[in-house]
Image 1 (cartoon, rainbow, N blue to C red):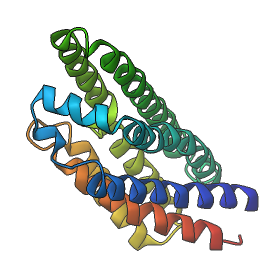
Image 2: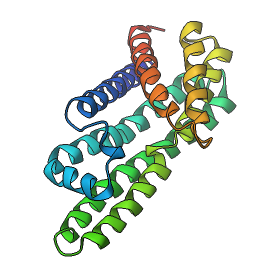
Image 3: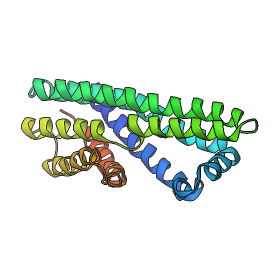
Image 4: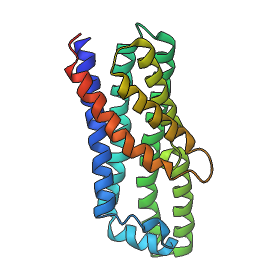
Length: 215
């Protein structure tokens, strides 16, 4: 059990660090207003910042998804004794979320390579390809956080019923989960930012608690 606490705690802190890295790079270097530019302006921006953008995508999607597998596994191991049904369903959603975000990141990075290769020859074709990739990326997890929200909600409910972790942290988890689920509603996509910011606190809190837990 101590090994599970260490795995889960380390993974949760890593997730918080990944979110912080993502937000800092987005605000500091990757132009948060890039999405409001025209498609041609976005492609020009991405061409000038390709390496940095692909690193950012790799960290916040691919690496995040890999670490999420370890966190989901560890949380299931600590909760299943008292809440086998809720924790069992939660770990499935955790793995699904992991697959979605990894796929989203890989499609984006590979798609960007293909788009920028076509750009000098046929800007219209490149623009259409990138619009398609952006749609896929947003659908898989870049714009809708419903699967992640369900995972957080299920983990939180399992924790509340098992009485294993701080209750205040679980109440925060309910808020995080709800914010993620509501992003599925058209017009509420901006809640994804709220979901991400609150998850930084939730992940960091969860990581500290798990690493400090002895029994």
